[in-house]
Length: 285
Picture 1 (cartoon, rainbow, N blue to C red):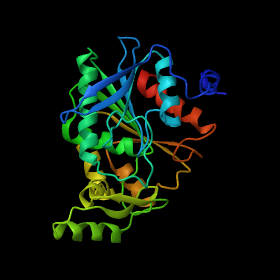
Picture 2 (picture 1 turned 30 degrees about the horizontal axis):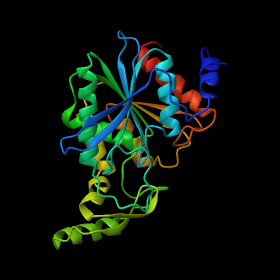
Picture 3 (picture 1 turned 60 degrees about the vertical axis):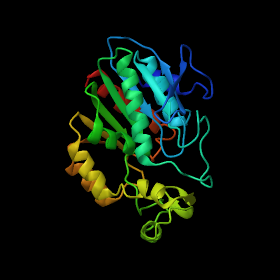
C-alpha cells in the first residue's frame, strides 16, 4: 500500500452530505444582480488556495467534487467550491436534463472568473484550479481567455470536449437544427441532446454555446493556456476517444492516467486519483 493511502481511505469512507467544519457559504452578486454561492474553507495561508469546479448540471455536493474538496482541505489547503448558477438564483440542487436550459458556457466562464477574483481579493497569492468533467472544460476556456495572474496551476480531471462521442447523445443533426433556427432568427426553445442528456430543451444559442466546444476547438484552447497544466483521466473512461487522447498528448498538458478508473473515479480508483493530485498540489514527487 502506497504511503498515505491508508489516510486517504479513512477520509473517503466518511459519510457525504455533512457540512464540513469551518466551512462558510459565500453569496456573491453577479453583474446581472442575481446570486451565486460557493463554499469556502480556509486553510494554511502559506499554501495555494484551491478552487474545485463541478461537472455538467451538478453542484459542489457531487460526490467526486465533495470528497476531493474534503481531502484537499484536510491536507491544509484553503478550498473554494462554487455551484454554477445555470440560470437559477443561488442554485443548490442538480438540474434535471428535462429542465429548460437557458444558461450558456460563457455565463459559466464569467462566474468562474468572479470566484477566482474573490479568492484573490481574500489575499490568496496563489490559486490552483481543479475541475471535473465539464468543469474542467469551463476552467480550460477561462484559462485560455481571461486567466487571473494569481492562477498558478490547473488540474483538469476527466476533461472531454462536447460533440458526438461515446456515451454522449448530441449529434451533428442537433447542431444543424440549432444553426438553422438561428439563421431564421428563431431563438425559441428547441429540443436537443447534450452530454448525458437524451432530451435537453434549450434555445439554440444556449445549446450551441456548449456543443461548439468540440475536440478541435478544445485542442486550440489547451494550446493557449500558459500556466502549468495537468490532465488526469481514468484509463477506463469510455468517453475518452482515441482522437481526443491523441489531441491531449499533443497539447502542452501533462497527461496522467489512473489505470482502470472510469469518468468519475469510482470505488477504489478515487484513492488513486487523490494520490495523483496531491503531489501536484504540494510539489512533492
